[in-house]
Amino acid sequence: MKGTERHRLKENELTQALSGATERFQEHRSTINLVAGVIVAVVLIGGGYWAWKTRSDTRAQTLLGDALVVMQTPIQEPKPGVTPPAGSYPTIQARTEAALAKFTEVLNAYPSTTAGIAARYYAAGALATLGRHAEAAARYQEVVDHAGRNSFYGRVGQLGVVEANAQAKRYDQAITAAQALVNNTGDETIPRDALLMQLGRVQAAAGKKTEAKQTLDKVIGDFPDSPYVEEAKKMLAEQESKI
Image (cartoon, rainbow, N blue to C red):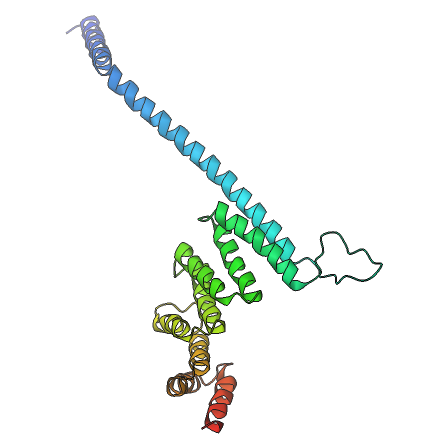
């Protein structure tokens, strides 16, 4: 076959291929346009969500920062003839209440953001400072629910649940929460001796002497180098002296 003929055949094949492709494109144009439109929409929606989330997170962090600034504002007791510095508070209670209001604003507006969870945790601490321990326990539990039990805030939130319930003299709830932490042997984030010591304190406060002794003995026996050993021994001695 001559070269010119081969060249002509190849041109015909190319022309047919392009023609076929064009026809298929025309046949499926509506489908292709639909898919392209969906892809563009997904990109736009994804970009819009990312931009919205970024703005939301930034705003939440800013509000949280404002609340933390309030917590660090100096206390200036009123004095005759002396004008207190701008932004100061006359008492710790007044400052704590002001900070609590700001923390509450953040957690209500941005409940699922990291800043919102942190604000919930600090709000619980503020409630405890104000002596509203039952409310603090509930707020700490919300921290656990929002953050997850195995996250940083989830773990410290669980400790807050124990402490706040103990302060509210709701010892059964405090013991249950503390025992759950002790039983979670797969999580070593919080030292086990610290968890046992917390459980022992709550059991002792609840008047459960037998259970408290077992827990405190475990601290001493299983963790002889623990910084809590001396406290455990002292608590045991105090309990024995009351018998």
